[in-house]
Image (cartoon, rainbow, N blue to C red):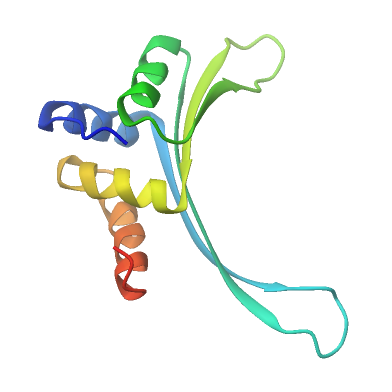
Length: 122
């Protein structure tokens, strides 16, 4: 992954604040619905930006060189949308870079960062 400069991080933080989402959720997952099977605690961490301007989304993808970039499915009659999505440790890397510039999504980004710090992986 390439390390973006301060201005680029601030711009990406603004994109996440306005057009993006930060998904952090803890779930209990039961493997094989049989008696005696263990329940696992699972944490889902995902960040994404979606918008109709392909060049902006592709720039984000090229800037960090992680995650996935592609077209997002939309209902018939709507404009095409493009999405950059990152998950788990890739999301942590980006969250740590943009957290200080974020306003709207700062609390969720902090949850992602603290999740990995609690496990000694940050």
